[in-house]
Image 1 (cartoon, rainbow, N blue to C red):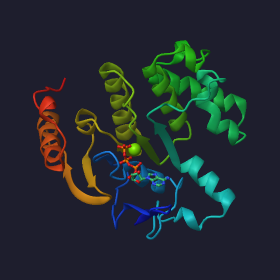
Image 2 (image 1 turned 120 degrees about the vertical axis):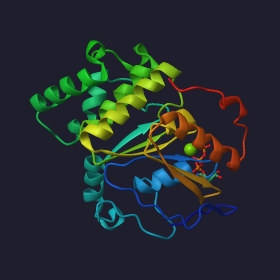
Image 3 (image 1 turned 180 degrees about the horizontal axis):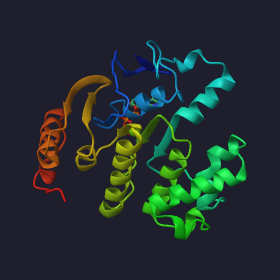
Image 4 (image 1 turned 60 degrees about the vertical axis):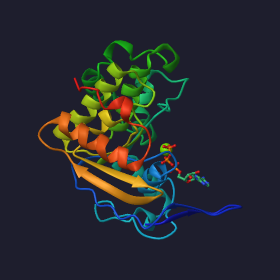
Length: 249
Ligand SMILES: Nc1ncnc2c1ncn2[C@@H]1O[C@H](COP(=O)(O)OP(=O)(O)OP(=O)(O)O)[C@@H](O)[C@H]1O
Ligand SMILES: [Mg+2]
């Protein structure tokens, strides 16, 4: 697909990028700032439309769906996690998590049961009645993940989900995503600047100036995968020297 942002000066954000993701795959997308990562994610998630090319999700082209079917498709098939959490401040943790079900008009009992189960997995049970302003960043991101998971989506799209978290909270989030990926075979596409986060994935796709640059697959050891990710990042440009001595825990 190709994406051109029209404007005073047209900008080619994605240039003939072709990408296939397997069901159950956990893939990271990396690349310099402005390389088109968020654009790619927005197009996959049908938030934005490509200038040319097609997106097929399980054989369906979402852009061929009628408007109502598209919102339903989006809500049922896709879960979103953002860098800045995107929680509604007036709602409690519990209400934020069930929001997609509320929008679907699901019965209250079913919602309660789902929240109990997911909150347990995400260690949120004790704070279900709190509001976003009363919880930590890690708790906020776990709430956002709970909201993304409540529909058991086929695909989770995450844009820098650990970008605003300290290393402990980031590790928690990555371990949760890994578990969801392994247990439920949920496909995850995660944009990240962090080579440690990327090292949790099965594959890392690198893009530069909206074009395919490289891709590498994980191996048996996360430490060596991490080193290979750093190697590609150094080819991409940017300073990775300060990262090269980090050991993974
Ligand atoms: N709505 C828009 N209108 C015009 N240009 C845009 C728009 N959104 C993004 N761009 C441009 O498209 C390019 C890709 O942007 P994008 O947000 O996809 O980058 P990114 O890889 O996510 O960067 P970052 O790592 O900083 O988040 C950038 O040059 C950006 O300025
Ligand atoms: Mg971005």
